[in-house]
Length: 374
Image 1: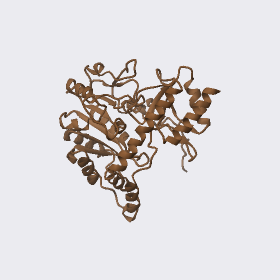
Image 2 (image 1 turned 180 degrees about the horizontal axis):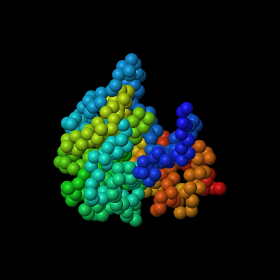
Image 3 (image 1 turned 90 degrees about the vertical axis):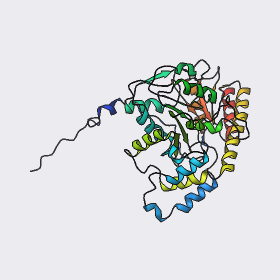
Image 4 (image 1 turned 120 degrees about the vertical axis):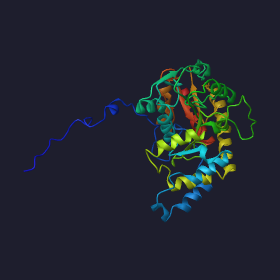
């Protein structure tokens, strides 16, 4: 006779103790339907490079039965050449979120607390909770800027996006150099997810510009710079991200990656990414169009009496003294325009708007005008 075991009714019974404590990251809404104007998750309003799409079509054949190159060798070489680096300084991950997760695991599990802003990418505290990393939040100043003087303290590591999210405000190269000079004993990670939108392609970049510090990885062995292809290269649906740093940092990331998933980047993603880096004209044109649209959108919103934080990204954080932010977000959603509302203290009366096409932005502005007139 088989003795039957009574089923467990409490779904939490088999969870590890840590899982009970986790507060997972909540991604932006991904609504179904082409009729929705989606301005909530900072995706590109333009498609990927035609060369990338052609590469996907060309490689969607029988070799998909084979595992991809676990080291993404060719893609690493292409990215290294693009940035004038050695391929040993490049690490590839399944989107920059995976790169960041591996970086937290590889560098931040230290006796000392790490530092990052109180208003920033909300995945950072999730990684800390998952990997049991102690952290201290450093408040943004009254202008919602990162004040790097506040980071001149003992720490187990520093991370922040530049430009920051969700504010869009960026730091100059000289400011980051000052931070690196004052913080040589722990790893500094600069998350440059939005850096391509900081300056138009024809702009002259100097030490006071908000611009990439990726080249500084040649000078500072504790600097790791993380990029994503999800934003400016329109690859949000095909997960590719990468980090650049000293070879010793990259080796640590490889050790963590190969203890987790040896094949993070599929064949199609590798080929599409390689092709994307070969189409510089398309890339720069797409970025410049977003920057120009951002300028026009800010001007129009200011005419409607909104305050727009100065943005170096492909989104704008806005506030209106006479408007309830969640009410506006709800109003727009009912008109199939999705923007991002945050309930976090200090920005709970702000809305973040991804810069869309000029046509999408115009429909957004018309809907906001209707709300104001109601």
